[in-house]
Image (cartoon, rainbow, N blue to C red; front, side, top):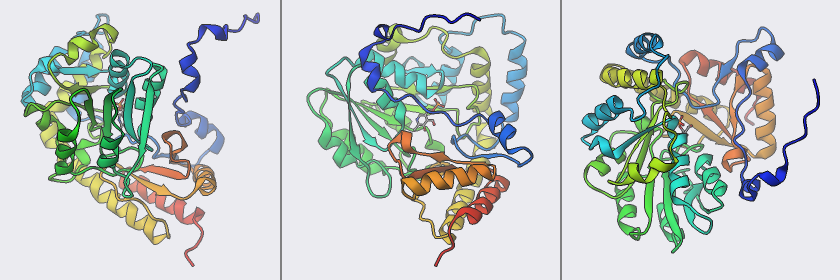
Length: 374
Ligand SMILES: Cc1ncc(COP(=O)(O)O)c(C=O)c1O
């Protein structure tokens, strides 16, 4: 093999120097090689603990035979189904290669250097990355003590150059959610030049009476709401997210979107999942909530102090050194959790709620690595 000349760094846009790349978890295959026979429990990426619904798996198998063709770039069948389910005009719905793709399209379409996105922090990094990659300004405000977005602080940070204000609720990595009433009050308080974006990636895990962004869109409120099939629907590997917003949103984003952003297998699986949701979702969500409470109790019994969570994960603030040490010690026992430095919380660990067996293994490993309670 010959050495090739290195890419000329002058080709790269200077704005990218300020963007911290996403640090993915270590591949399972890597860890298997290192740990040998130890069973590996991955609780690091907030996926749902169970495979896709049976109807989705069938749809995936059927769609496999048609993959010589490009997918429907408009994802119309899925948009129609989502529109019907939520009472929203399908023309106001967009499907993306995960919510991540939609977040990126939104900031690409709207933010120039000098423009601003306001968000809470620690939080989901894609908003920040996308904004900085545009050369725009990402202004972040601290969270409330319970790990939810502080809506008063967020509203207070909005200025004349703010174009987007993002509310991630439940928030990743802390798990806190804003109240439904507080959210509508916040939306009412925003000046008209700002587009509010509500990230409901973990919507399904909210308690009864929690916010419902799609109902706000249906009621004619001015906001964008995003959801995903990656969590409660168990389709993280296929990458399907969606958003609904004001008329004109789809047209505004059209110039920056990939034509074939969502593959046909993913579209078919998401569509079939919707048909099965009434039968499948409540059981899965009920189990995650019960296991989340059991995990939090188990961690508390070890002297740890998880934040209250409305999502499918719990967050522990233990300080940077302890977080690093615990992460290493847990990994050596085959349990992978997520250190949250990349999300702006260098002293935190985020633990996804898994199956009862996985959670038992997490608690056993924690017991082994956690210093005894005095
Ligand atoms: C708050 C939040 N928003 C968006 C996403 C992206 O989801 P998707 O898998 O649909 O790209 C995630 C994924 O973890 C998330 O935690």
